[in-house]
Amino acid sequence: MSTHSRRPGNPPPSVVRRRQAVTRPQPLDEEEYIEQAHLYELLRLRTAEQMPIQELLEQLRHEVLATTKLPMAMEYLLTEVKHSGLLAPAMQRMGHYFTDFQTYLIRQSEEDTGRFLMGTALQIMEAEVKFRIQGATPAGMFLFQFEVLCRNRLSYDKGLTAISNDPIFDDDWSKWILGMRAQIGLVELSDLLFLVSDEYKRRLLEAGESIENKGPFLFGEKEGRIAFANRRKDPLFLFGALQRHLGYPKVPRIIKTDPNVDLVPQLARRLERLEARIGLMEEERRAGLDITKFYEQNKHRLKLPE
Image 1 (cartoon, rainbow, N blue to C red):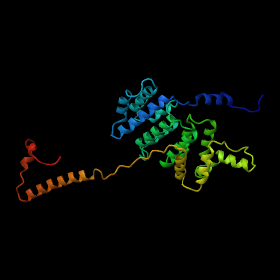
Image 2: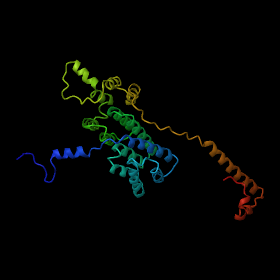
Image 3: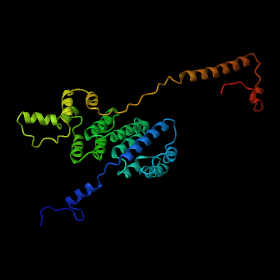
Image 4: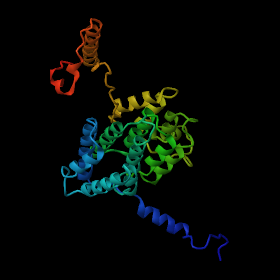
């Protein structure tokens, strides 16, 4: 009998590993990603017009391709929105269709703090799905998603956990991403990337050192050289260099609207109201104010601004 005991009823570790392998999400077909990008774009544009998300889902479910699974997913989202007013719980239950990172972005946009807006989340999700359509690599997808966390000041712990479950990553990638949670803030990002790159492996071999217990070597030589050149610098410089030299996609940045655009019309309406009030005060001062014109039946005779 084995000396290793386990609690009654718990499956052996081999069974647990098999179950995890079965439940790991798989990449979707290209047409699913194309329709997702279309949906996120429409939602982003129409939510900017202050349209309720419930009405949008009602309308847009007829605009997406019926041969995909997206209409069924939208039906489920619509049911959850009617019940709780939130999208994230339904997306989490559909982990086979929506990635954990997409669910995390929507959940953060639905927080009461209001720091991360729904429009920002939809714009990021649209860009991410388009990157998948173009043939995303694990290295490019990780750098894109991690830059999203950096630029929008999202939680590294929860964000990296969501990233590690993306179907584009294999077990080596997922294990390394989860290990980053304890290293971010203590070790620079450029050093973390360099130590798992083929450039670091090449230098070890040239120096005659063993690569045993090193790695896993997930990034290429170019990524390693760029990471080494950006040590002790702002991580945003590293992202910019990788995007220039390797063509990685840029994270969408929301353009802030100018608050002074509507300032002139607002001032004009206020001046009209002030002129009307001053006119009333002058009439009252001259004892010539006729209050009968403010009666209900004489309302149509008034020439006051709306």
